[in-house]
Length: 435
Image (cartoon, rainbow, N blue to C red; front, side, top):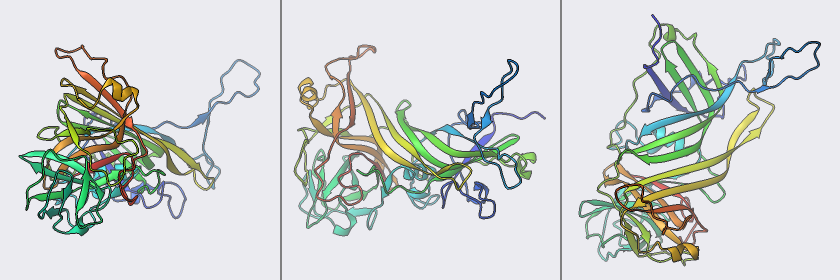
């Protein structure tokens, strides 16, 4: 029978060494890794990569065209080693970790593996939740256990059934300070959830491991080794949160001869996390009311709500290849050398803190975009502690039935509102995933 393009799967594995070199041949060999099949949209999954080539424009005695030279060395027998490299797009809905039965931690999930490849992750230092004590305000709390909190980490709570997010600016005790403010003070005895916080360090270091991918379809299989994320787009459809990862792959090689391919047993149903699919509903977004330029620590800023009609964000990680002559890829790893987050919010209700004057004066405001309600194992938010407007908000969008303000931000800085620089503290971009 002819193969069908509609049955396929993509699996992911953490690499212990970039490119997964074989101990015997030195060639990438991701087949020995432990893979997990992931949720993703079918359409972008295909046989990927292109052979890196150099043109040959040698002397000639007739107007013939010379085939390109594949940029690859020969093996020990004098045979050129086939290889491809390139990028692919992975589109998926965002499913939360839930009860952590399927995936014990965020680091085990396919999304966590990809995020860790270009960001640092800060897990809660102790428990995933804390029962609040007395003496609570909109920016300070008395913890049940102080050791549950850490500077820079994200916290989440339901207030009147609506999820709200903030980030710790001082966990030294006896109280914990956080910013931006909640809409009202939490009640004594309520549960504060401590999130796993992904951040881009100021030196863009402390990355997690690279990863490998395995693509499977009807009559084909390939492995990609030495992978890191080059970009992440966050969009709504219409309120369901979707991620679109762009993955840079250092090496791609086919394994169509595997017996499972001939038997048509190579494709695998995805492993699905226990939690809710993230929807931007029952959740608040906000900016700091006043500018945070050169704010003193610990920050405890008042907040102004944003009613979000539409939202998208693009995270771009500039990857630079570290060269080596000791493998077929010519790459020993990818390093992140620059980072930009651009967010766009469409709001039919103007935000009082975000004015033309604020844009002209180059003010920076803390921005929290809530992307999921808060419950056990569920929650999602992004945080730009010093978000900088990139365009005049008085230029109104009149392309729909409602006139809207467009608020376009990039991460500003430096952020001076945290008392330390431990883990996520003092970083200019953070993504919180609920526990």
